[in-house]
Length: 156
Image (cartoon, rainbow, N blue to C red; front, side, top):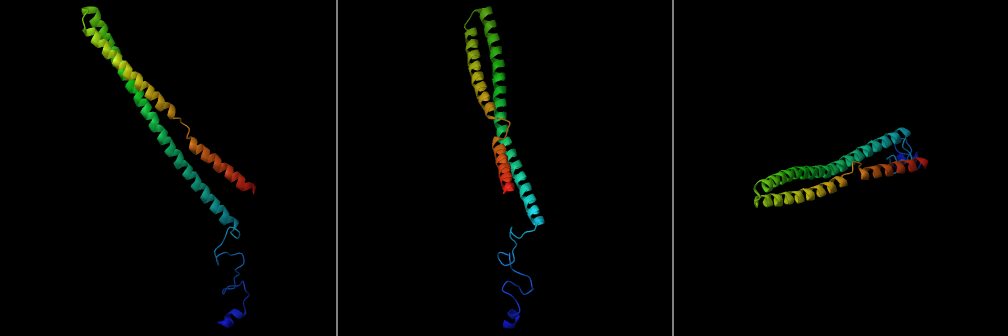
């Protein structure tokens, strides 16, 4: 065994290859990786980054879509209730003019109540739609930060 080591230098393996520049006894590091390996790693990391950013944008748009859907539903409810309120108002006016009895007062009370409900639904719908901006802001900020990081790394 001592004779096996006699002909080798301190940085030479049994197969005759050198261990210089190798960290961890044979693993290649970024310092001794080939240009092809570096480009391959960069391509893989860039495609993973793009896929992750797309998933983030998709999740953010889905969240904003839910707000928009709720707002549209509330506006729809407001329109439907306003339509019923107009019907009740017309029925109240007809009853008031034709019979001059207490029936028209009941119809007017129903009309006012329905209009109040429609107003509340419209305000809720407006609030939900305002929260649903179509631009995925967090994703845009994240992509800008990634681009700045890549630009900064390429200048080094």
